[in-house]
Image 1 (cartoon, rainbow, N blue to C red):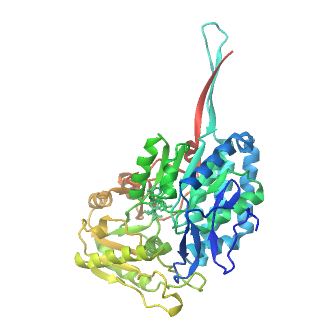
Image 2: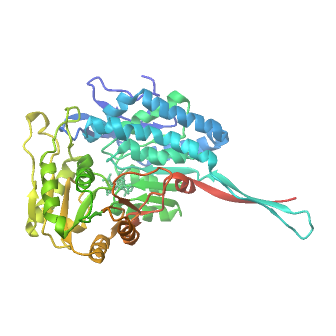
Image 3: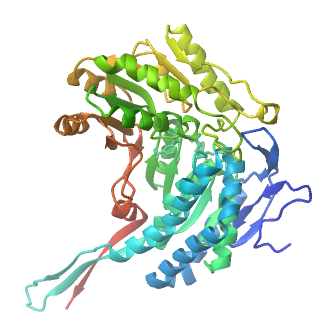
Length: 497
Ligand code: NAD
């Protein structure tokens, strides 16, 4: 079996191997099992990376920077990244399959959003990097000869990329696209729950001729495993991380040791604000998506909804009907609109909030438990789509990120009141505001302390604009030139003429 392909075992189960220096390798540290979330079926075993694998991957990345990759003209780099995107698209079905196996989410979502966007990220940043400006000044000097002072944009170096499981390819390439376009070499630590597309990507890199060591993958877990070892490695220059706020805190501590730069995209407890003058049908359609998409496992999703009192009862009833019409099912079942949670632990966590809501006196509008399921998927991690009303604002159900298909809906009476409630959180990732009064919508948007606000829409963004969280939802901004600012560094060079 060629080491530049990730081998399958004879049983059809995949062994998800590390991809280091252009080769699949290594199970010195053992494995853990990976199960499909929709039916609980074992799909493979994941190699557990340790310090040795991280060290090998970082060394390979450093060597790549000193070799062909480091000397490669940026135009050639851009061509290769275009080729990566084309190769992902050529092997589209394999990527869809891998991601469905990892996350259990409906095929339609993979085909129409997650995989195409995951591929496109390489092209977007390859094109963008060509036009990023840097400064150059002609200076006067006392001898009259002058000097040229300019800024040279160089890669940061070796970048550690630590990814979550909720949109694995898309969120990984959102970091890889700009990191590679800027000329860095990367070591990726995919989530232990989603090894599939990162593993496949190694084959893609080899097929198009990305030099060995530019893109490395080390599988494993977080604390006391590959994730932590990557953040602690002395020869890593920067860490880019998407995941929970608590994990971000641990990574920041580790990165501080080597004064490594960090970019963090973290958790949220996002508010939706609905004024009585909204376009009602569009509003409901949007909340069905922002609350239930990806089974609620979307960092930008809405878990708190505030509805102006005259519209409150109608809104709750309409969202209830739509929640009850969602269809659970495996990724390949036609018409499925709700997938599973990622694993048993996440299911237990969500169900614990379902119980807590009742203890705290919520009215359960719909859901609140586990659905009845056909035998074919009963081994998966399913919960009912759930809506509550009547909770106090300090209930943990209203303050904590649950990351499930659920939200709490509360009425409000004034603009000031809803701004205060929306801001009453340690998070600051996103909000969605619904009103036909555009002046008011703009006023409220400016007052809500989040990184991104949608007015009369959700999950819509020109990828050139800045993306990131306020408060405990993140550090830094990525997107467009903002990504390039993180993945490159400016050197000041002054030449006496
Ligand atoms: P997580 O923090 O549990 O894990 C993310 C990654 O970090 C995994 O690869 C994990 O192995 C690794 N990790 C865990 N502990 C580590 C440690 N001590 N050192 C180094 N690495 C470590 O997050 P998750 O459960 O995979 O993802 C869900 C979370 O991600 C939610 O909070 C969600 O809001 C957030 N998220 C945020 C964004 C955003 O753009 N802001 C996007 C997607 C997901």
